[in-house]
Length: 157
Image 1 (spheres, rainbow, N blue to C red):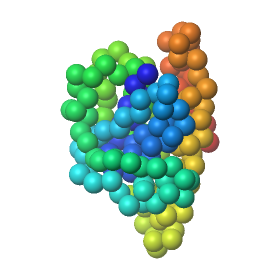
Image 2 (cartoon, helix red, strand yellow):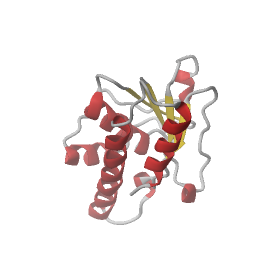
Image 3 (spheres, one colour):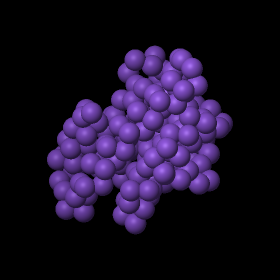
């Protein structure tokens, strides 16, 4: 099952979600991430937060959602924070879609320590959501119920 995490820059939130899902269940899920306006780099805060959780980020790079235009995707999860004042991409087609609003650590003000602490909190929130996602029965579940469950996961913290 291909799960695509989207955010605008594909440098922090979606990169962490991709790594977390790959770490949680790489046998059942192919984790992907992209952005509508890729930053061109993986933010050091994303790597540091994943190091803190013991989750590898191997061969991660910032990519455009255009790379997946012809790839059949099963689930698309947008991670744009509603308060971030940036456009959140919408994936065309018929995959299950959900919105899990997450603040972007790359724009968080503060000292280096405060910013890392914030990125780790976002990573912890994402990890909890990913753990709930992998428990869903995608093989036998009704699409409407799965969509509802994905949205419910997005609203929990």
